[in-house]
Structures are given as C-alpha cells and as structure tokens.
Image (tube, rainbow, N blue to C red; front, side):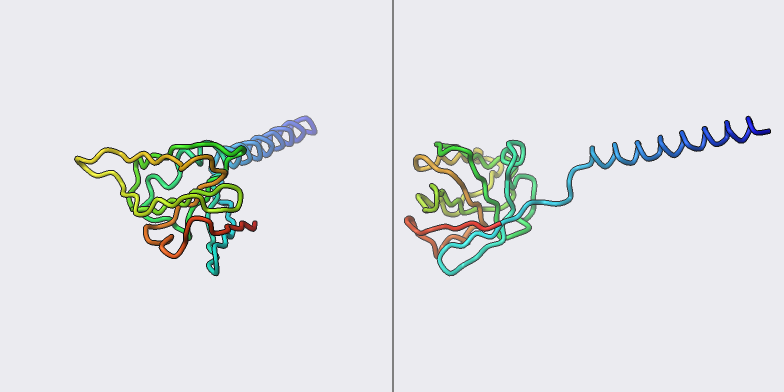
Length: 153
C-alpha cells in the first residue's frame, strides 16, 4: 500500500513540475506586453513616446498600425550615422525629426504612406544623426532646425 501511495505521489509531483515548466516556457515565448517609453521635450512641449530599441523594433517601426498609439516613436542609434527610413506598410502620414545628439538637424514634414500607384517613400537623413523622432503629420509644425531636444526615461 505504501508503494502505491509513493508512486501516486511521484506521478503528481512530476505532473506539477511539468505544468510549471509549460507555463514558464509559454510566458518566455510570448511577446512582451510592456513597451518602453520616454518623455521627449522640444521647446515647451513634452511628448510621451515609444522607444524602438532593438533592431527588429526599428525595422518594424510604426508599420502595420492604424495610429501611433502614443505621441510618437523615438529611434536611437548607438553611433551617429547616416540612415534611410522607408515607409513600407505605413497607414498614416508622419513628420520625421532628425536629431544629432540633442539638436534637431532636419525635419521631413508630411511623409505620406504608400498607396496604389505610388512607390514606397524612402527618406534619407540630412547627414549624421543619432536619433529620429516620428510623430503624426503636423506634430512637428512648431519645431525648427537648431532646437534642443531632451529625453528623459
């Protein structure tokens, strides 16, 4: 009788261990629901923006969204560089603010999403940049080249 209860105990213990392992593996494979955000201040305006931190986040950017979902998206680069952005799978127009260190060095206004009969737009940075801020079209209307940008996390 003791052997019977011992075997049942072992089977229950192994079932619990297997269940816990499955739950943790599924959680590790699931995409994170928590996004990283920062506050960007330009002039008197502060925006709460999503951060595109990984290479895959930067490649996807705001593609396949019907709206930004925050005040914008900020892309950081580990080293100042010249970059190209393309508007593949974009569904709304954007303003792109090109930033070098803490200064706006360029603004592309009203970058349109692709439509039937129009090629996907590719935008080139106006030289070396360290970050790009994407906001809804018209969002950068009050900003100018030379303005200071500060980011807080």
